[in-house]
Image 1: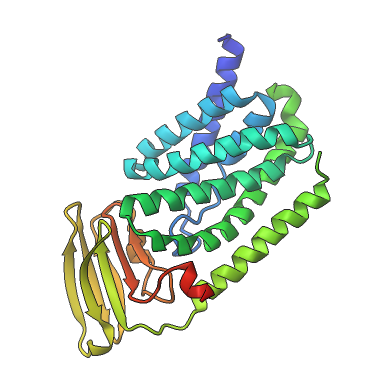
Image 2 (image 1 turned 90 degrees about the horizontal axis):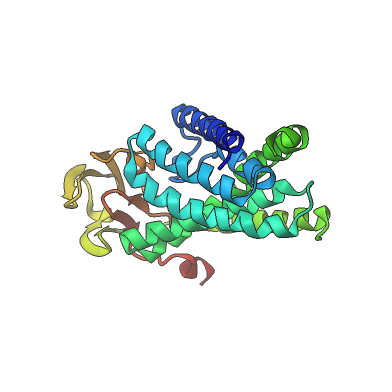
Length: 165
Length: 122
C-alpha cells in the first residue's frame, strides 16, 4: 500500500473517530435504544464513493473497534459490527446502481440495514423475537439519520471528491 | 439508473410505513396487566401489575449483572442497573408493545399479551 493512500485512510479514520467520540457526548435524543444520528458514517459513505470499498471497509472496521474501546463498551461492538457489516454490504450494492448525485440514497439504505442488523442481534442475544417491534421506530430514525449523513457525504464528495481520490 | 425522484418516492414510502407501524405499536392501548420478565429468553418472573397496590422494588440477578425493578401504581420500570449503558433505565416505564430491553444482561420486560407485530395487525 502506498504512503499517500495510507495517510488518507489514517486521516479519515481519525476524523470518523473524532466525530464518533463527540457524538457520544451528546445526550440521547430519545429513550429508545439504538436511536442516534451516526454522524461518523459521513466519512464511511464519502470514502466508499471516492476511495472505494477496500479503504472504506478498513476505515469503518478501525473506527468501530477503536470507537468501542474509547467508549469503554466492548459489548456495543457486537451490535455495531452486525449493523456495520450489513450497512457496508448495502453501500457496496448501491454503489453499483447509483449516479454520482445519488450518493445520499445509499446512505439512507445503509442506515436502514444497520437498524435491521441491530434488531436481529438483539433478538439473537436475548432470544426474544418480540424485540422486532423496535424495527419500525428504528427505521424512522434510520431514514432521518441516513438522510442527514447522506446529504453531508454528498456535499463533501461534490466539493472535496477530487482531493480524496 | 433509477431517477432521483423514484428514490425519493421509495424512501418516503418506507418512512411513512415505518411511522404508521411505530405509532400503532407505541400508542396501542395497554390491555394486559401482567408483565413478564425474561432472562436469556426464559421466563424469570411474572408480575401482576393490577395487584400492585404498594410500591415494590426487587432485584433481578441475571448472572451477567443485576437490574433493580420498580413496580408502582400498575406500572413497571427498571430503576437501576450495573450495565455500562443504562438503556433499560432510560427507557422508563413499560408502555404499549415496546419491551424494556437490557442487552448486556439479556433481560427483557414485556407485557404478557404483546406478541409483537402480529398482535398489532390482528
